[in-house]
Length: 288
Ligand SMILES: Nc1ncnc2c1ncn2[C@@H]1O[C@H](COP(=O)(O)OP(=O)(O)OP(=O)(O)O)[C@@H](O)[C@H]1O
Image (cartoon, rainbow, N blue to C red):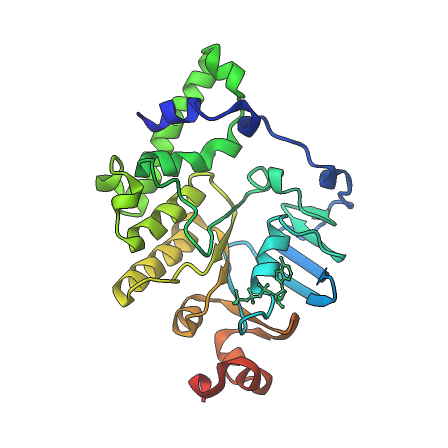
């Protein structure tokens, strides 16, 4: 099955964009032109646990911004707030020039945001091409009915999905694997397929949740090269959640450090590395 044919099998409920009630809470349009993402005073509670405490963060277009911190510091909570899975108790999120009290997750692709997951979230029974194509689903302009009716514009869109899959696969060196079932690929290549799936939606902001987890040293070097290329060739802004401090310091323009839900440091890798609070809370002997 081609990736275009695969897209035709996706249920209408998935293809028809839902407009979340959260969008109704949109605040006035923000006015910082090269701001890819802004978090202002984010608070998030789970019962008695304060997972995020007054966290503010900005990300400029074309910037790689790492968020690090010990286990339980709040990194995943932050990504889930940005991607609309969690609704913050306070604060606002600025995306694509609009400010939200709660990001409408169904509209993330339209807002130019794509993400990868800490644990692989691929469709194991599908090919590499089909998995990559699935990233385009929520960007489609035409619904299932237009495709079933064979409207020319819908047909052109379907054809263009195959081109996009080919281009992204070539960009990441995955072209020779396109027809293979994704589950037969080594883990490192599967992580690259996840990156390809995020890129096919043509985002402006990429959320990478532990892209190096489970990779060998060689695979990490390859993934590092891809992330750098994503920024340099495509100009994307990247939020990087990563435990591998070597990778973080090598790749990032700026690093924010969370500890117990609070941002305790924010600066260039060199600044963060010598920050006494960071050394105490997180980096320890590694930074010494
Ligand atoms: N769905 C949830 N329900 C209840 N508590 C949660 C939930 N998600 C996170 N927490 C709590 O919020 C705090 C922050 O957790 P979070 O997963 O964001 O940290 P993290 O920095 O991503 O940790 P790790 O590096 O281990 O993934 C922790 O105390 C955690 O137990």
